[in-house]
Image (cartoon, rainbow, N blue to C red; front, side):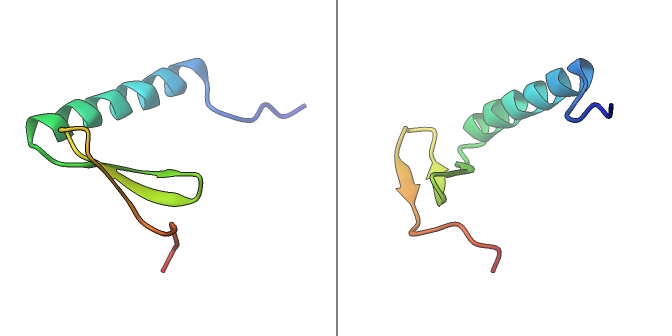
Length: 58
């Protein structure tokens, strides 16, 4: 049987990296960009969210 997915250590590192990126974005007053329900979301440190019509690979 082949185990799929990240190991515990890799999973923790990925979580830490994401948390650090969020902290840095706030420090430098930059938006955090992510996909939610197929839409691209820019979330600014002020809490303002800018949502596009859709996320694409164009």
